[in-house]
Image 1: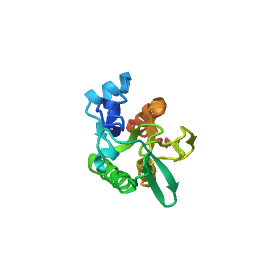
Image 2: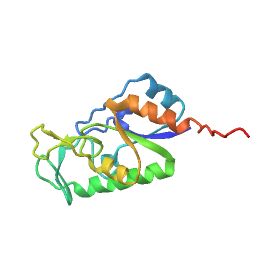
Image 3: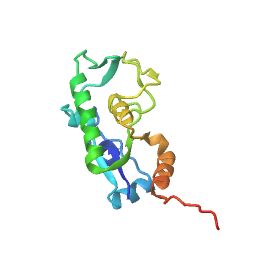
Length: 165
């Protein structure tokens, strides 16, 4: 049974920057939770940030720099949370991750541009990038069908074909 690292906010934990959650109500999520497959994790909390906290965005990619809306550098907390996410995947044996889209930590396809103007760009968040760098596939809540298919492929035994003599 494959485990999945999941953004804690999807499971109702109030860990978002605004002190809220992003509960993901999907029948497959409920089934996976009942089976004990879901490994909840919030890289921003694990990295040392509090709830609630000021919104933050990635202002530089190389090197990575994350600042909150007041201009305070929160890069160390984001990097530490990303490292801990990789550790959590390794310790739990998770095969993939389901993370919150558009988050400066968890966004796997797009994040905000770093100017606090609600403008999205096609870049991954700090944790999603680190997981992907370690070969861990990352999905977001809009890609749950692809995640389901990925898990099914991981758990389907390979069929070995042999020629008859």
